[in-house]
Image (cartoon, rainbow, N blue to C red; front, side, top):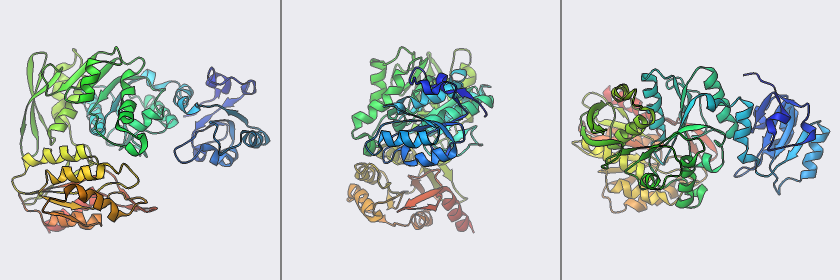
Length: 497
């Protein structure tokens, strides 16, 4: 994607400086490692570091303009001198992090304005809902892509992602690529971090979707109120044309009662009076049958999914794409939805247990996953899970309690312990399920999964929770290759002989 833009035009009115006259820029980046010659380097203050820590690398790469946030670690005169010696324009600007998305959007030709971008936020369910939206849009002959935890692009052919929501410049670059590839709709997972850090401020969201708001990322936000406030920003977005709200969720009901936007709401859930009401749910061996009420009419859809929450995720996706002109086709498209990798994904074998891999890593998500599985099990329900290190410590005992109240057998194991002691993390989780008669610790994740599956009978089910689609495990400073999905398949294959 080759382009050359005027630095003066790109940065006005946010930054006006005579030194920018006649300067042309061919790239833009927040990462010095990705910067190319003739580029704009936006050096932002991060949680643990600052972009200026890599100034020399940016200058060596051929930066033409450096715009940076002030920080006590870096002397402005020294930065200016280093840039001047390299023939580079350096501009100090407080709050440039909040402008990065808009600057990048202008650089890439405002890609979100030529597509329908649907932002999906909430504590759990963002990945499933965004993929369901893309699948339903495709069924409606509306070329659609996703951007989120599993990657970005057309589902099934995703490019890799490093975060639920990419950095401000990468978001705009990805949108520009998708626009140029002919996509008309993009379903984007929007994390609380991205909203708090203004990573998507320059994106023209047409629709905002809420799954539900629970507790997560308090290590970053500091309080549940701040976490919820970050999520709520999406529902006050300028130019929003539709908001899809969970009528079963307290935050969704609050946004319905006291909207932050004039965008018409589409509500969904079990409650009377919602736009899309789940009035009945029947659970079968490998699927669910949902009765949906809309405009006084009832529609039945058989979904190849597990769990009430997945039926609600499907309704959230339906709310994002349904129009009076396509209602019948949109309702019919529900029956073609498939599980997302690592999201209540089923694995099994003849005369063997049902094994489900899910990304649940909060108490609410773990409870929902276990509740979803229980009706499909005539035998015992086992769960294998842990908690990540260097993250919200308060949720550990809550997850233990959620498992203790719902599972027959519990095996606690390492998730991504990172710099923390795996044993200490697991003991904190076990504190929540101390009264449970069958709760043990097997720190090695592979051994834990093997033990759970090998000890499960043909009428039993095993939930492997916490990592879902992930293919790596972070222990200390080392990243190891590990996939719950691959490990489960190997254990089942060996068991089948």
